[in-house]
Image 1 (cartoon, rainbow, N blue to C red):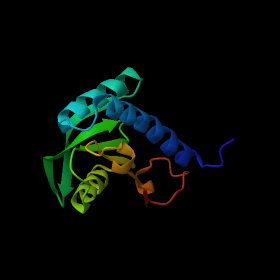
Image 2 (cartoon, helix red, strand yellow):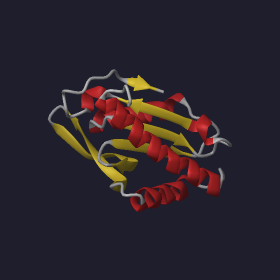
Image 3 (cartoon, rainbow, N blue to C red):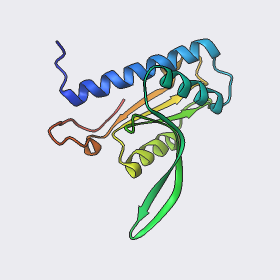
Image 4 (cartoon, rainbow, N blue to C red):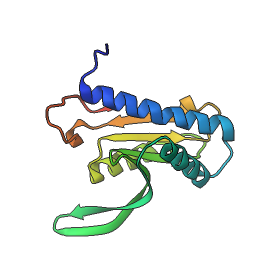
Length: 147
């Protein structure tokens, strides 16, 4: 039996399954394509495996009493909880991390994955994010983390 708290187990299970599909896509397609190709294949794979997935969804932000309706577009939103930001760059930079962290905070999503498909080994291009303040069930408790 797992010693993880329920939200930690959910976070672990969901991201592990999603990462499994990312590894499969990377192993089949390699590392030389445009971001949009990986996005399409990722969305297909997730949908085929029962996940609710939205692509390139415009997301609004609120600034004081002003709403910016299309402030940014998340590459993929899975189960309305996990934002996936895809990159095909030589290496992930702090600006890429800032981007997904801002997306998560502005949209109040608890889970995030930043994936760089240009890496020769995808395991070197993965960053996971979790912000417990956006978990809707307050009975769950965990700390914010970046892995």
